[in-house]
Amino acid sequence: MRGLNVAYILKRLGMFVFVVFVATSINFLIPRLAPGNPIGAITSRMAQASSGIENGQAMFEAYRARFGLDQPLYVQYLVYLKNTLRLDLGYSLSSYPAGVWEIIQPSIIWTLGLVTVSVLITFVLGVMAGALLAWKHTPGAIKFFIPFTMIFAALPYYLLALLLLFALAYGTKIFPFSGSHNSSIPPGLTWVYIKDVAYHAILPSLSIILSSLGFWALNMRGLMVNTIGEDYMLLAEAKGLKKARILWWYAVRNAIPSQVTQLAITLGHVVSGAILVEIIFAYPGLGYMLYMAITNSDYTVIQGITFILSVSVGLAVLIVDLLYPRLDPRVNYVAESTG
Image (cartoon, rainbow, N blue to C red; front, side):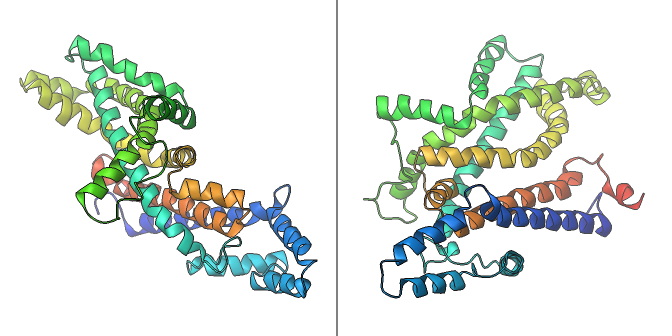
């Protein structure tokens, strides 16, 4: 691939593996070392509950042995790493014998759809808005109205979600205030079901889009200001090319690679905001599932969800980093890796 060699690719893959390893280790330690010790709280409640049951203590000890809680911490850690390497996330503590994958797998689709669609819409609208703000030939009316879309950038995801929920769900009842679809509609690839899912996703998506749009627009505007002064822009104008072609094929095309890199870096922030949005709208994604797992002190499900989120963000950064030379011919990692 242009701008890349095997040494650099292996270097980036090694960094990705290291980041996932560190995130996985922290993921293991936090529930066990955090104040209050969630695992200890679970076992204490079970011990108290088993005291009044015949053979309750034996059941309690069998439970600890089943989940490896009777082993030293370092043994639990090694077993956890081995199982994670095999993508075996274990069983749920609060919903045993249900497995962690069995619980969170349906939620992955909902979060993936919500976050992916929202981020892509925000990215496209933000790039267009920022480009039009910086372009000197943009009509004054458009330049006047675009800044109003950035007002919501000062509000965090969850606060804007609450405002939208109050104004468009509880107040006017235009949109549903919770859930992902109407339970009376059978799931399937039908127009009725797809339209209902999209209808329920409008408010959660809108809270993410409005909160992020201003950031992308301002960032793109700054990149466009630097790009417009380049020699190739002056040459394009001197050739008499159409203004729209100069804007989109010369200015935006050369400014957008930095935005793509920023997209991967800020993905973690978007995902964390989506978690709070899902909780507010009771949207059955990973965020809402994480909230329910924390409420039930189900640390195995918590570990599974945070592991998936950390790997997803790390993988997104890796992919963008490897594709960047294709987006910007001026970037060449070959010299960097051989130097």
